[in-house]
Image (cartoon, rainbow, N blue to C red):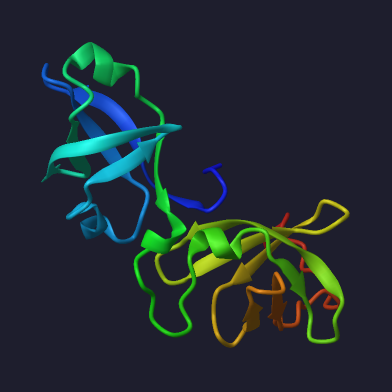
Length: 177
């Protein structure tokens, strides 16, 4: 978890070359957000960005304080974070993943269904993975037809889940007719 008030934008991968350049794995939907940055917190240390370029799926960064491959290797696995005030702007009705995780999920009548633990990227739409107090997993499609309210200041999400056809008799698929 990033320190309070900070958001994660990447994770340090392996060193690139012998002069201290690092492969950074972007953990943001806004990859261009790295451009124009002067400094970044890596783990709990502040580093000054000397150069930055894109290569394949990585952002290659060189920090002024890291002169060698060996020094770069020591940062592998650490998270890159920035102050929350530096978060990329969102359009109306959009939310950061880190704001969704931890929300308490309620049905329209006010019954608590669980707490969001993860956001799954499925391609068509995101799915909020929540867990109830009794440990049951709940998968909530991130669709306006299902998610009625996201109230960040109060830590709440109201959802209207489609009816599950539990009362129908289940067909036995163990034999063929």
